[in-house]
Structures are given as structure tokens and as C-alpha cells.
Image (tube, rainbow, N blue to C red; front, side):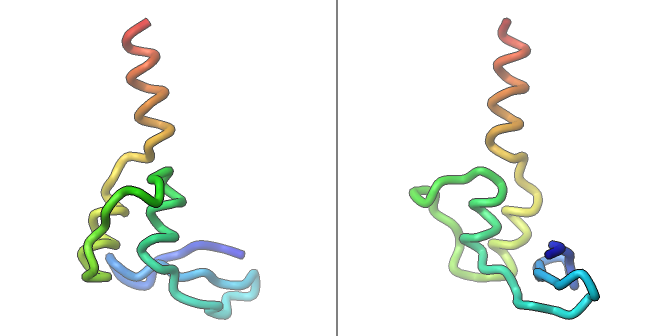
Amino acid sequence: MVLTTKSISQFLLTSPCGEMVRTLEPRELARAQGFGDSNQIPTNRGLAGKLIGNAAPVPLTTAAVGALLH
């Protein structure tokens, strides 16, 4: 499976031959970025996709800050 974008706020899961499997839900995108289920996300799918897509992944941010502090 491949994760790709159709537009700035629409993330798609596709098969290896390029067929669309389904659109990912905002909660799934947040989880992929390392956000927990307790994090609030907007109910508007377009806004949620933009915010999550522009966010720095939580594990990456944690590692970068940890490296800077040591």
C-alpha cells in the first residue's frame, strides 16, 4: 500500500498498481504523525488534513529537542 495525496487536504491509500483503496480519516493521519487519540483535531476534514500535514511528527520533534538539550 502507498500513501499519496490527491489534493492538499486529501490523503489516499492506494494499491501497488495505483488503484485507490480509500481516503484516510483525519484521526488516522494524526496517528501516523505520532499524535495520540487524546489530541483534539478539527471536525472539518480539509482543515484537519492541512493542520496534520503541516505538523512536525511528535517522535521527530521529541528526538530533536532531546538532542539539542544534551
